[in-house]
Image (cartoon, rainbow, N blue to C red; front, side, top):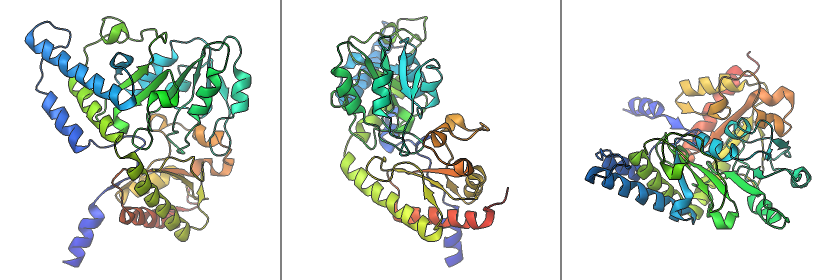
Length: 378
């Protein structure tokens, strides 16, 4: 019986890649299932269409309420990537940071890119110097997906408000809702990207908060949906499930952060005890989001470690899922000044809200076993 239970325990998979995607919460799943029965197009005038429109607008209002916005300031998109593109491509002269997600860096290829320090914090002095008369948008993420850095968005907003001209402020807050209050007035932003799959919601839907008066150019043309900014039939079931997930994410944040940060710190302590040479990449204190740990083990190839850990039933990653397959090291790890010898060793551990110390212990033990097996094996 003991060995049977042990085998069953080992077969249970542990998921520590929440920064890439999260499972559906039970409430989000129930809402999705409820809304799947709605067959009407929200743009139609008949009863089925009116019902679909009613549910769509209820989801929009719920999202707006969760972030302290007006319902007409929420535009649904097919993903966080699309929301970032909608925001960035509406402006001609952009300033951003070196560790942004590729869905910001790619559409802003001609942007002025500001460096960051060893913790991933944007250089505010360099940002101020970059604000030439042509600049019309600053885009800085709220939480970095790889090293968990929490950027000083409120400080940036406060500085921009003091200028004698209007520079709009966008933040990709996709990684933040489970761990931070994202009320838009408090942040002081004009545009904010959110992604359902990062907050225990469904994949395939995101949204862009657009403060009233902010100029935006449509990204998808062909219909008048979403105030003419995003043509195409709206996905009512995904919108409703997203709204429920975001509402839950913004509830009991302090309690969630305290508990998960304690497990994260316990995980790091366990790793250091088993692997004394392990190095933490990025912020060391309060500037790190509660569920993130990015580590390097000298001599251990990160991609090899991820594959080996997966075989042992533990899911971790090396970088943003949107960059998997690239030959060069993570641009985030390079930007924070990790030595060349270690850029290929960075492993990201991003924990779910229900993580336990027992989970953390297994992750650490598995990582230690993999390291002893594969260090310097290339």
